[in-house]
Amino acid sequence: MAKTLPMTMTEKILAAHAGKKYVAPGDLIDAKIDFALGNDITAPLAIQAFNEIGVKKVFHRDRIALVADHFTPAKDILSADNCKTLRDFAKAHRITYFFEAGEAGIEHALLPEQGLVLPGNVVIGADSHTCTYGALGAFATGVGSTDLAGVMATGRLWFKVPETIQLIYHGRINPWVSGKDFILYTIGDIGVDGALYQAMEFCGEAIRKLPMSSRFTMANMAIEAGGKNGIFEPDEVTLGFIKPRAKRPFRIYRTDPEAHYSAIREYDVSKIFPQVSLPHLPSNAKDVREVGRIEIDQVVIGSCTNGHLDDLRVAARILRGKKIAPSVRLIIIPATPTIYRQALKEKLFEVFLSAGAVISPPTCGPCLGGHMGVIAQGERAVSTTNRNFRGRMGHAKSEVYLAGPAVAAASAVKGRICHPEEVVRRK
Amino acid sequence: MKLEGRVWKFGPDIDTDAIIPARYLNLVDANQLARHAMEDERPEFIKEVKPGDILVAGKNFGCGSSREHAPLALKFAGISCIIAKSFARIFYRNSFNQGVPLFESSEAAEAIQEGDQVCVDMSTGEIEDLTLGKKFFAKPIPPFMQELINDGGLIPHLQKGGRDKTQESSVSGC
Image (cartoon, rainbow over all chains, first blue to last red; front, side, top):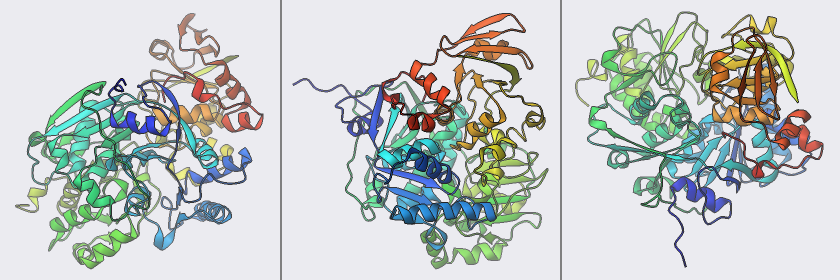
């Protein structure tokens, strides 16, 4: 029998879910969906559309998560109404995974932590950062509310098989550099549409040294390069994370050695230093030592990008025994209740509170200018979030500088954007 | 089907926060969302936009969030179609699902100017700038997608008994 043509991981996962032996970039396929996600902003429109389709039941009550995480705890009456829409729908359809209040975390940290999204899965979410789950070796992509409604009704969705770009990272990782710096540097290199419609496959020996938190951060921001998905080949780090928590059996897919890539880019990470993306595009990435003197009003450490326990630990390492600058407001947002509890246990909150930080419950909040730290006209924020578009965190004439947790914490101490080494001598 | 309207011109990388700022995402009513379309980007847009008007933009239009509120707000503001050098992927899917046709043409996106009167033929992909007297061509919209647009989007299309033939199509992008 003839051997099948070589495929990338993304192509293999899509082929398997479309019941095909082989797919090629450009093929339009109808794929089975393993897991679907909606939140308090996107699910109300999806529920409206679902009801209009006129289907009586959701495709699978254990394969849908509804997470109230964006404008929650409800910031106003309309947001409370939207949460109620989710709650009522979850109840009516006996949806197993409805998360709110003390059970809710930021969706893209919460679902992996709960073992609901797994290697080899096809996951869609009505949220652009759904691509985060690619860190586990899943095909995961963001869609709109109508597509989510269709999936809730049928468990299937059509896709165009994307081309894959291979991004190879090798060399020694510099102090205070994390996955956030890798991905900002990469977006700075290829641009905000550098991977438009394409899969971004992250690999190389420097990637294998990264903890899951950094891999989630990188996959999370694939969308900021226009990517359809970001993906990592599962290794022992992945399995160490997912095995103890997986709620279902899963399968691992690996790229064939001869697979075709639309482009290959290589990075020597020994040349990547802590990065900052200047307003108003994530691609405006620069070495932190090259940005000059930029005074700041607020620092946010959190979000689906950098609200992981590792991120809080890095921030605490810098803030321990220090006070933030009097002119700065520091807001720290652990991404999930589990992370929150663990940070409490490790006494990180003691460090943050002594430094003068505010600790928020898990919420997307300020990342999208929702609440819990919206900024005023003329203000500047350093944020570990994923977007610095005009007006993203508040007033149209405010500015967001994207960075990793180390730069963010150090900048809070200095009151201006700075390298972590200006605050802490050695890692 | 032909769409004719006056042009609003925008630059590259217009993100979904520019199209509909996140502070309005607690709204679900399309008419209310439309009142805030492009509010921070072009405050005069919503006061002056007329039914049938056309957006023309640079590359990567609609980048950022997956919020379907973005094409929904533009549709209810009266925008009949969008011509750009390229579109962000999720915005592309969402727009067709909402019944807003998109056309990719770098030449048209370069040449067409703010305020020009433009006529677009969905079935041939012909874009005519009536002010400049110039014609451009984008990929035509396949017949079943035109049906979907005529019905007002995917959901009304399905309600009317239209088959979901998207998997048989050759839609660009996505």
